[in-house]
Amino acid sequence: LPYNILNVLYGYVFTVRLFNCEHNKDPLKSVQVLLKISSVLSQDLSFNTVQDALQHAIAIVNTDPDLSSSQHYSLSIINDVISLVERRSVVSGCVLGVHGLADVCNMIVEAKKLSKKGTDESMSKKRLFSVHMKVQFLLSWCLER
Image 1 (spheres, rainbow, N blue to C red):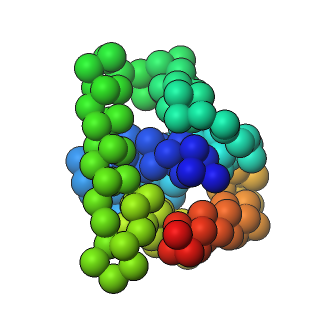
Image 2 (image 1 turned 45 degrees about the horizontal axis):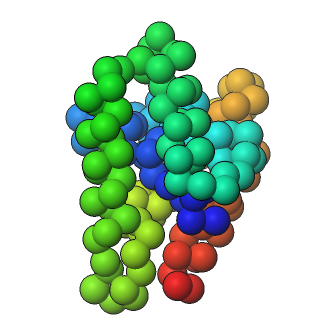
C-alpha cells in the first residue's frame, strides 16, 4: 500500500501545482487530472516499488500532451512528494502524507457535488464514490500506522 499512496500523492502534487494551489476552485477538473495521472485510482493498479509507482505516473504525464512537463519539473514534483511523506502529523505521527490524502478526499467530495447526471463515465457520481472510498481506505491505512 505505501507505494500506491506514493502514486496517488504524485498525482495530487502534480494537480496542485498545475492549478497553482487553486485546485479546489474547480474540483471536477482537478479530479480529472488526478485520475489521469494516478493509475491506482483510475485503473486499480498496484505497485510493488517506489520506482514503479513514480515512474508510472511520470510516464503518463510525459505521454499526455496536456500534461507533459520537463524532467526538472518531474523531479520537483518528486521532491514535493518526499516533503509530504516526511511531514509528520502532530496528532497521529503518521508519515505517509495524511494531509495530501485528506485534501484528495475533500477534492473528490466537492467534485461529486458538482457532478451531474449524464456526465461521462469517468466523472460520474458512482465512479467518484468508488475513488473516494479508495482514498479513504488509503487514508485510514496511514492513520493506523
